[in-house]
Image (cartoon, rainbow, N blue to C red; front, side, top):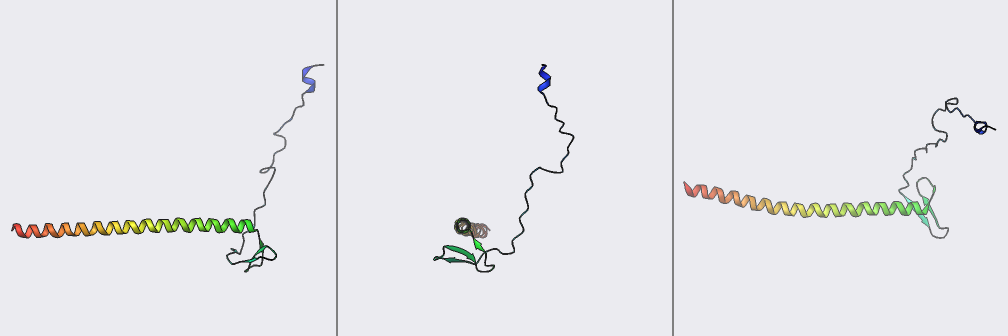
Length: 110
């Protein structure tokens, strides 16, 4: 028995596929943003008040946490910008005083 007798020849060029073997159905765009939610403590359900769809409570909690993180970052940015404005206003005041003093010295020198 020859070593080549157990080998099966497979020609991959014979069958051409259009695209991948496994395709994912694109999800339909949602018309509702689920921004008005209702929490029913008794049934332990979270429901969108606008479209009445029952929502995944963990996903809703995750979205709220993301929003809170974004708002915290915005607040931090605003505070940093406000501090920078105060710093720049102080610098502006110093520069205006320097200009005023320089003008005054020029008048005195004449």
